[in-house]
Amino acid sequence: RNGRKFKFSHIRIQDSVDQLLTLKKAELQKLHLRVGTAAWNVSEDGRREWYVLAAAEQLNKSLALVSEIGKRRHVQDVNMRAAKIARSRNAFGPAAEFLEVAISLVDSSSAWRDEYNCMLAMHCMAAEMHMVAGRFE
Image (tube, rainbow, N blue to C red; front, side, top):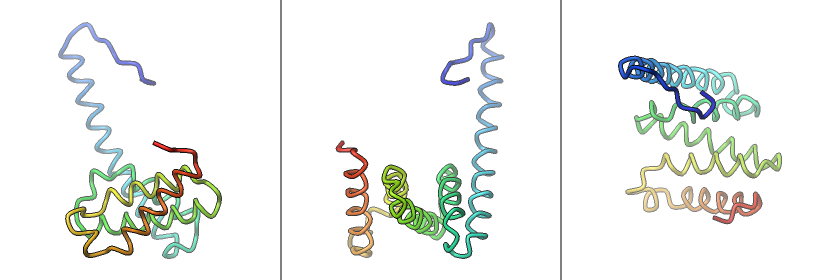
């Protein structure tokens, strides 16, 4: 693996390997969701910083499985807390990444109207984190 593609002599073998890798990815996302949820549960509602960061990283690897609005909002909140923790530790790059995930989870059709202050805070903090991290794209 490591960025290289597999080559097989028969297309059916390639198809079987691709199917196995896809299944593994789906199972891995479920595992990330379980680990992220468990890490959040032991974080004592965000008071134990390491667990908040671990929860955010694990939940972010399982975003494809988070479709309900309530769960998306929860993952957004976890990422906001993780961003604030990362910022307080001068880890501006990771803080920006957590904020980008939080922003991506917002229902964009009504968020600026319904949650203006939250949206403004997230975007301003993301812009600040990108700036201090030297990401001017």
